[in-house]
Image (cartoon, rainbow, N blue to C red; front, side, top):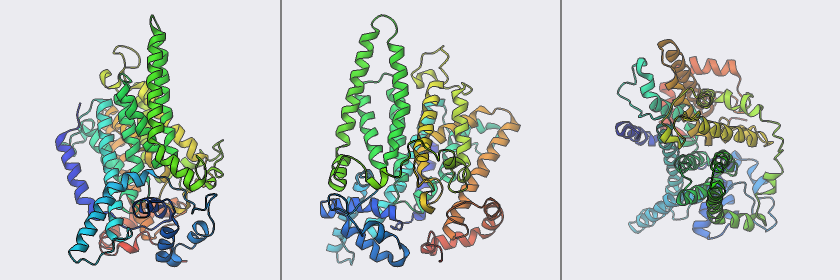
Amino acid sequence: MSFSRRTGLLLVLAFTLSLPAVTPRIYAADEIEYFSFLRSLWFDHDLSFDNEYRHFADAAGPRLPGFRETFLNDTTATGRRKTFATIGCALMWAPFYGVADAGVRVARLAGADVAADGYSQPYVAAVAYGSALYGFLALLLSAYASALLLGHVPRVDQVGRVARAGDNAGWIAVVAAWVGTPLLFYMYVAPPFAHATSAFSVAAFIVVWLRVRRSWSPAGMAALGALAALMTMVREQDVFFVGGVALDFAWTLVERARGQGGARRVAVLLGRAGLAGAVAAAAYVPQAIAYIVVNGGLRPSPLVTRKMTWSAPHAWQVLTSPEHGFFMWTPLAVLGIAGVILMATGKTNGPAAATGLKAGGPTTTNVRVAICLLVMVALQVYVVGAIESWKVAGAFGQRRFVGLTLILIVGLTALLRSVRTAGPRTLVLSAVILATWWNVALVVQFGAGLMDRQRLTLATNAYNAFVVVPREIPRMIYRYAFDRKSFYAAPPR
C-alpha cells in the first residue's frame, strides 16, 4: 500500500512552514568538525582543517574554551589537525553547499557584499537547511516503511476521532517522532550535527532492505551495499545496522539450503552478498582515503578507538540514566520499541507480500522483520554503551540514537494499530501525547537555560514541563523567533 497523497502533501506543507525554525549557525565542536570536512574539500581541495578550526575558534572566542586545546594544540601522525568526524555529511551536504556557492558568486557579480569564502551565512544556511530536509525525508521514508510492513495508509481527516486511531496510526507515529524525539532538536536547533543526516541514511538503508529481501536481487544488493557504506560514512556507529540485515540474510540462506538444489541457491545468494560487499567497499573509498590522509591508516582517530570498551559497560546507563539515558530523555522510544516487540510476537498483522515471507507460515506477520529490527536496536545500545563518553558532553538527549527514527516510527504505528478498544486506545494515545510533550518541553528548557544540560532532575524538569513551559510558551516562541542567539547559548559561568 502507498502513503496517502493527502497526508504526504500536508506533511510537506508543515515542513515548509517550519523552515523558519531552522537555526542556520555553526555552534558546537562537532558541528565545526563536520562542516570543516566540506569547506576544506570544496575550497582548499584538501583535508587539512587548520584554517577552518582557527576561523571558528577565533569566532567563538571564550565560548568554546576547550576547542583550541583539543583541536589546535597537536596534530595527527600525518601532521594534520585531528577530527572525530567522518566524510559522509560533507558528501550529503555538498549539493546544498554547491548551490549556495553558486548563488554567492552570482550575488557578488550583482554587487552584493557577501564573502565567497565558504564560511559566510549562505554556506552555513545551506548545510543547516540541508540537514533539516534530510531529517524530514527520514520521516517520509519511515512512513513508507510502516505502510510497507503494516499495510497501512495513514490518514489525517479523522485524526480527532479516537475511535479510529488505528486508521491514523502511521500519521500519528510520524508526527510524534518528528516532535517527540531528539530529531526535533537536531533538525531545527542544531542541524549541522550529523544526526538528522544519519536518520535519513539509516532510513534509506532499511527501506531498501525491506524491498530487497523479497528476492535479494543483484541490483538490490548493490544498492544495499552502497547505502551501507553511506550510512557508515555519516556516522561510524551506524555500520551496526547491517547486523539486522545480516541476520535476515543468514535466515534466508538456511531456508534456501533446504531441498533439492539448495546448494546452488545458496551459492547464488552468496555471490550476490559478495557483490554487495564489493559495492560497499567501492562506495567507502572516500572515507578510506580520508582516514589514511588524516590519521595515517585505515582507521578512525586513535582518540575515538581508545574510548571504546567493547564489553559495553554502559549499556544500561545509556537507556535509563538521568545523565542522557535514552528512555529518560525520550520516553516515546519506550513506546516505539514496545511496538516492535509486539510485532515480534505476531500480534500485528501485515501483508505477507510486503514482508517477502510465505503466506500461511508462522512468520507471515512480520515476526522475522521485527526480530531483525530489534537486533538493530540491541546493537545500537551495545555500541553506544561501549563508548566511555556515553554522557555525550551536555548535548541534547541521547543523540547517538537518532538513527533509530525509522524503527521507532514503525513500532509506534504497530502499537497504535494493535489497540482496538476505546480504553486501551485512549491510554496509548495519552502516553504518546505525554511523551511527545516531554521532549518538546525538554527542548525548550535545554535551549532556554532552564535546566542542567548534563542530566535530568526529574522533579524540576517535570514541574518546568507541565507548569513553567506552558505558561511561558508565548514568550519562548517570541524569543526563539526574534532572539535566536539566546537559545542553546553557553550557560553562564
